[in-house]
Amino acid sequence: MSEFWLISAPGDKENLQALERMNTVTSKSNLSYNTKFAIPDFKVGTLDSLVGLSDELGKLDTFAESLIKRMAQSVVEVMEDSKGKVQENLLANGVDLTSFVTHFEWDMAKYPAKQPLVNVVDTLAKQLAQIESDLKSRTAAYSALKTTLENLEKRSTGNLFTRTLSDIVSKEDFVLDSEYLVTLLVIVPKPSYAQWRKTYESLSDMVVPRSTKLIAEDNEGGLFTVTLFRKVIDDFKIKAKENKFTVREFFYDEKEIKREREEMTRLLSDKKQQYQTSCVALKKGSSTFRDHKVKVTPLGNPDRPAAGQTDRERESEGEGEGPLLRWLKVNFSEAFVAWIHIKALRVFVESVLRYGLPVNFQAVLLQPHKKSATKRLREVLNSVFRHLDEVAAASILDASVEIPGLQLSNQDYFPYVYFHIDLGLLD
Image (cartoon, rainbow, N blue to C red; front, side, top):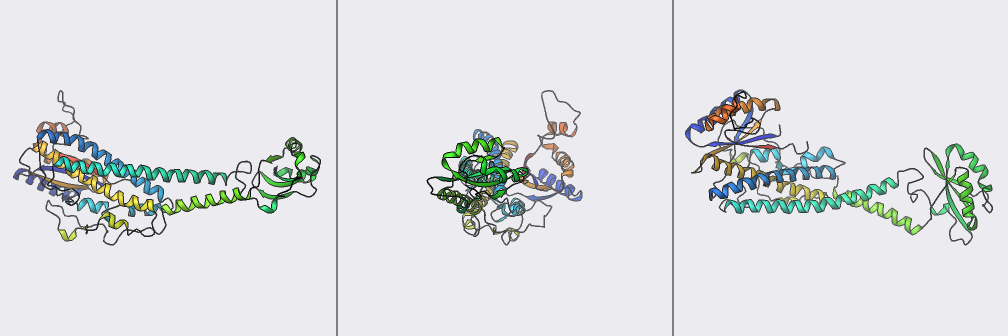
């Protein structure tokens, strides 16, 4: 599953034993993989500041998740011809998302833990705001390009009444640079081909004999040329209409036709350049980690994917990729990394507010084995940690108990700190 539960419990002896019981039960019942989630010791600040940060982080969490989902969808749109490779291009610090979350380490360089919490949150907020601003401008430009191209493509794929004729006609089909003669294009229904050939010379005076030629046709009819004197154009159009022949308004301008063809070629090239098919696959060393240890101990550093390379350095590796796809990959990584850091901050702030000072809690990441196990897993956690909030836990475990003035649901309240991480970004 691409779902994770990030929880915390007080770090005293009683609760560490509760965590061990949780690990034992979830392991034996095959409910989840459990790993320690390391969070640095931050500067706590005042209670008022923590309450304010709790609200701000909640909003920032929602904003970050929405942003990375939009970026993931943008990757899908840009890679429309290679959608099967989308997931392998959605990486965080060069590794797949599951590996990044399960082996999370706080980035001290980007977000120094020694700074006041409000400064760390402000750095994350500004970073995400800048990414969103850039995303809007870049995707707007790409959407405008796609719309213009689609409009041109529609003009070249419609029927003979509506489609552009610049890719059908040629200079040889027309009498050009004549003071007296002009070539018209006439759409003739297929059942009327014989009638057209028999009558077109007599539809008006001054029609050049044997001047008609079929140059294109679709399912409904054909496009014929006819040459006549300019002075009888209006009369010819009237007579043609009476016979259910349609004169298509068209003036052969070689420069305009060349410009239109070049515009189509340029737009196709611009769109293609945003994503080149030789996109970089999953980098070496980004395979999914298979071994999950069901105990609350730090994960060994040797198993941790190398994270010394920055996103900006990885951006230069994307040879063969278009600028939009390359930008999306780099900034999706930065936004996702920021999002998980926000989750860590939320756990810290909520744990201090709920469990009090001095700071002493243990954060654990749980990955449910399957969707059907989540209800049972929730029941196990609520039972193991019910001592943290006896009243709330009792109401959760027994839905039949109603407590006046207290509205609780097992869907939105837990006796322990809980946050949800959903990696199903393309669902």
